[in-house]
Length: 345
Ligand SMILES: Cc1cc2nc3c(=O)[nH]c(=O)nc-3n(C[C@H](O)[C@H](O)[C@H](O)COP(=O)(O)OP(=O)(O)OC[C@H]3O[C@@H](n4cnc5c(N)ncnc54)[C@H](O)[C@@H]3O)c2cc1C
Image (cartoon, rainbow, N blue to C red; front, side, top):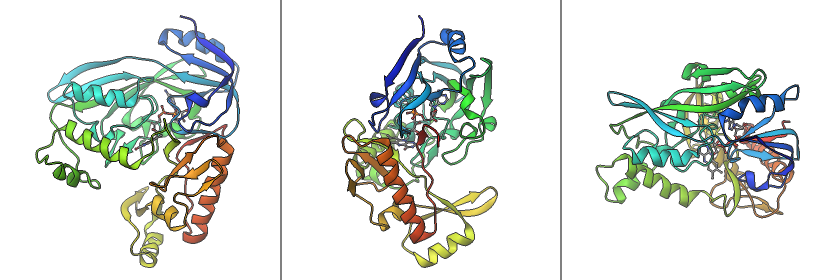
């Protein structure tokens, strides 16, 4: 099958914010056998923007150059080693479909990461995390292709340099890497992580005192459905800002001034630090539930910017900028954006 190439392609249906934008050229990669043709199509041009499910991206304008949409499919078990099972999934697989599939196979490890939108290939980019678990804890390795040379490469967990919402793929000349498949190490025996937030309490309230991985997944789904707007109804990209991690000295002063603020122990490099709640900071600045035209802040979750209809990426970005500035003016902390801004700024 030949590569699908569309010029002046609309991107609105391809991003969870639902903002209108056009790609000068949209290439869809459906099969690894198309990689040589892809390499030829990209020859001598600038690196494309690689697009998965579009759930962590804000198109702030039309995209010059190429958007490369990854639609590679396939999931399989590679092998078992005692309790551990290695699973391999192609980059274009839906992440949550993989979580459901793994649970149906009796495999544990992904339950806390239920219902995160997007594709498998994007999961390592920001080391997706939720309810006390991050991808790195189940990550085995991934295969990527260097879009400049067409050469394949394998990345171990150490190569990926995972940190909070971060990996090597967000730095340097990361745009050269196309992730084609990811391997995860799951387990047959549940090692449930219930310490985060209200997970344990919600299981208890549901009368589940000896939960399995599927019970945890069901509770995570329930909490997420209550807390987060569904992008199919209200455009959004989940958390728009990362929780800031500040040096311990700054954190101590912050805690003294704001004893009610939620904080969590963290590290900056090897130094002790404090993770602050971006949602708390934004809410204190009065942004929760506000609306400016069709760009707004969700009424239930202050971290989530929403598109009430036809907000443009530029309007959403302008609102985000005002929020960042007000948080900085009041608390002395700059919030970092979580979604990728395209075109790059
Ligand atoms: C309602 C909602 C809730 C969310 N909750 C969470 C959450 O709990 N935790 C969390 O971590 N995230 C969360 N997110 C953010 C998002 O779901 C994740 O970041 C997800 O991994 C993005 O996947 P995607 O396929 O949509 O990536 P895209 O948005 O398409 O791309 C994101 C980045 O990954 C790169 N990329 C994508 N695929 C590839 C590939 N194959 N090779 C190389 N680079 C690639 C892109 O170039 C871009 O830089 C949420 C988003 C929404 C809308």
